[in-house]
Image 1 (cartoon, rainbow, N blue to C red):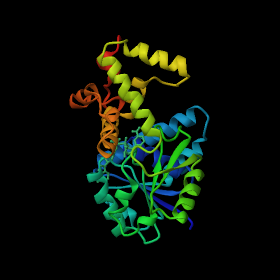
Image 2 (cartoon, helix red, strand yellow):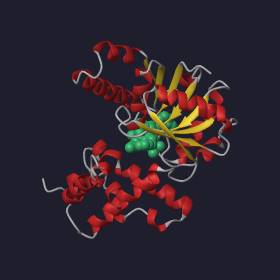
Image 3 (cartoon, helix red, strand yellow):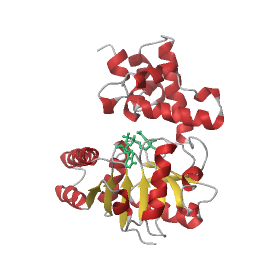
Image 4 (cartoon, rainbow, N blue to C red):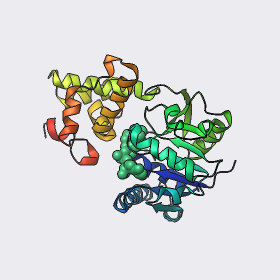
Amino acid sequence: MTIKKVCVIGSGTMGGGIAQVSAQAGYETTMVDIKQEFVDRGVKMIKASLAKFVEKEKIKQEEMNGTLARLRTSTDIRDAARDADYAIEAVFERAEVKLPIFAQLEESCPKETILASNTSGIPISLLASATRRPEKVIGTHFMNPVPLMKGVEIVKSLLTSEDTLKVSLGFVQSLGKETVVVKDSPGFVTNRIVTLVMNEAAKLLEEDLASIEDIDKIERLSHNWPMGPFELADLVGIDVVVDLLEGIYQQTGWERYKPAPLLKRMVEIGYTGRKAGKGFYQLFGQK
Ligand SMILES: NC(=O)c1ccc[n+]([C@@H]2O[C@H](COP(=O)([O-])OP(=O)(O)OC[C@H]3O[C@@H](n4cnc5c(N)ncnc54)[C@H](O)[C@@H]3O)[C@@H](O)[C@H]2O)c1
């Protein structure tokens, strides 16, 4: 199967990044969202990211121009997905938002189209149940920020076919990424680990054990992490972290994944991290 056209649904942090690397790798890419202002914001983010690569001489101006020429936007998923060879969903981490999209993709895409999800932990088999092609549904779990992060978890459900896996591995690797295949289970591998770290950090702060600067600093220095748990939560989005924890908790009942009350309060007051311009550092930082 040759992939030429890619459709990315959702133009937020992840959808924008995936559309960028897809167009950069030479695929005709259409990025979809529910409102024009959202796709415009996505394109603005992509332009800023590419301009930074040009400025740092990582890519040439012509590559930026070519990437943007291959990128289209739409607010009509049915129209955008009509001739897609590969579709990747990257909308909110809620099954009730993702399921209707898979049903729409089933109706709109050609029969051969692979339907991928960038979900961080919702079962791929559940998303596949909204389609009549569960063997063509797979998880492609890109990391944030997509243009910089090398690793992608490829999630194979019990029903994903070997052919879908093979094509997906080839496609994701053609974007310059490295892949690891994991089984379909709550939180997969990456989020089983990293959500616990951010949840525990929030509990440390609740207990007033140390300042957020010091918690981040000691983790950076002790484990050679590029950023500490609060810096990471602000980058990922605290609402996303809560959704992830709740998703794993609801599916497994494991108490350790119950979101720390502080994380939930942060979301309730709109301090969801970098994307909102306010997160842990604005509320608890010394500066
Ligand atoms: N943020 C991260 O660090 C990260 C990392 C890995 C995976 N993920 C996963 O990627 C997915 C997207 O996360 P994000 O951080 O980009 O979220 P986001 O909130 O930045 O963006 C989601 C986008 O989806 C759009 N959307 C919602 N409903 C839609 C619909 N019906 N049709 C089209 N667009 C719709 C929204 O308008 C929004 O622009 C989630 O499943 C999340 O768990 C996120």
